[in-house]
Length: 148
Image 1 (cartoon, rainbow, N blue to C red):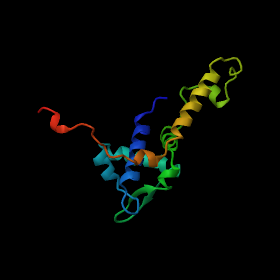
Image 2 (cartoon, rainbow, N blue to C red):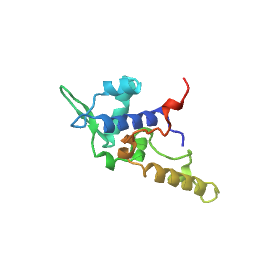
Image 3 (spheres, one colour):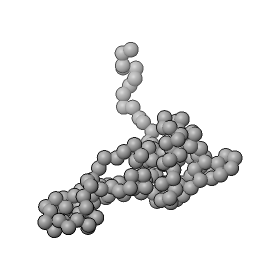
Image 4 (cartoon, one colour):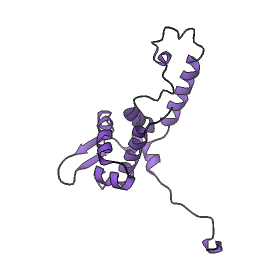
């Protein structure tokens, strides 16, 4: 599956909101645009399908912005990618949707179904909470040993 910039940036947007939202969980898109180096106009387009999927909600007024519509522990990476991309199918194959008249004769349909299931299992096995948690980096190297 080739994830487009829509999927990649939607994931980055959601991770940023989960990790850095204010005490109420909301954040301005302008901040995300500046910190993540993503066009504000592009982010404005991305929030629509995320809101339609029930992943984001907007907060209007002074100090408004966007916030997660559900706890980060309940949002899976697959939810975000499907909202942005449409599907996780690895190939355009009518057999995956059951609408191909040749699917009974085609030897590749089962392969594509298995690959799609593996992709779904992986992206649905990772939560937004896990992605937003960035562990502290610990260096096992004594920096005084490194020559300048």
